[in-house]
Amino acid sequence: METIELTSGHVWTMVCAALVLLMTPGLAFFYGGMTRAKAALNMMMMSFVSIGLVAVVWVLWGYNMTGGDGIAQIFGNPFADFGLYGSFGTEDLIGIGFGATFAIITVALISGAIADRAKFSTWVVFVPIWVTAVYCPLAFMVWGGGLLSADGVIGSAVGEAVDFAGGLVVHISAGVAALVIALLLGKRKGFGTDPGHRAHNIPFVMLGATLLWFGWFGFNGGAAGDATEAGLIWVNTLAAPAAAMLGWLLTERIRGKRATSIGSASGIVAGLVAITPACAFVDPVGALIIGFIAGAACALAVGLKYKLGFDDSLDVVGLHLVAGIIGTVMIGLLGRPLEDGRAGLFYGGDASLLLAQVVAVLVAVVYAGVVTFVIGIALKATMGWRVTAEEEEAGLDRSLHSENAYEFGGGGMGTSYSESPDTGEQETVTAAAPADREATSVGVK
Image (cartoon, rainbow, N blue to C red; front, side, top):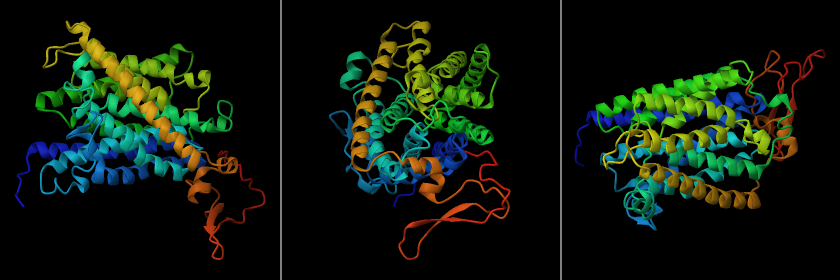
């Protein structure tokens, strides 16, 4: 085996990959804190199991589908290097690992829209299918020489779409998929009326936002071509979320509400999402503008689910879809001159870059929406998506995982689950509790 010298570029990519991988546990805390206490572990498990499932898919066939010789300019040959044997012993494995972390967090993002009511078993089947049928093809279309690239059918007709770190591939696709699956599942019991659906652990939400912001420097910066570009990306990844947080809080204030911790955390995420596709294509002032607009717009967008009647539990649509579209489209307005001479309208360009970005958004929305609908309908007809009313009321932590996120009342007394040695069926075991202690005294829904 040939020995390959480890360069600073290799180290940079490996560090960035580790940062991006950290984002998925960070997302687990962000989402887990926003659910009810009795569904927190289930919410976090949906992120963690995504790591295991997507990593396996990526090694076996997923990575192959994002590059190489394309099939109808939509996806690469999944069997071109099955199991990565052809890449073994090469430096390509570093980039392959980096790409895997993007696929992992993309599908994990979807889970926030279906909190508190989805079957874990169905989610486990959905994850590898969706990554294979939606994420990998979109990655090929945008980054692998497919439809939206310069040589693609669409890209050659309207101009190549630019997406530095995943506005189209990651956030728009996840946001659309979240909307589709949320509609298929229907609303949670008490949606819009039950105060018990509020976030149960806001410090977890803030911790999750912190880990996401930290990891996002690797998310955006991992593909930087040189130190100059890396510096620009780093500053833009700082500036946009900061401005977005202020935009969100100002919007809350204008609407007569107090500035909230969840609002600040959500504003940060909105800014991170919006700057993702544009991080290498706009200057720091452009990043501030994109961030502020995204923060204000997302603060308004998250309330649409109540007016339109769909239950996007943790606002995946209002954050990732809306901010992803804003960041992708605004490259056509604020983009600095690209190598091919195109630029945003405000930087002396014509409308060609803006047209390419808008068309790419439409393609991503339609493709992700249609394919996710087909997957979702098939799983609904076979396995079913929704837990029973009893399981939803009991809480998914207990009913699906036989665990509790918290134990209240000394000595670990409470309800636990175990398997009967005779039947293998799950039995409920309730420990004795003081007569004067009510089960709901802690106020946990």
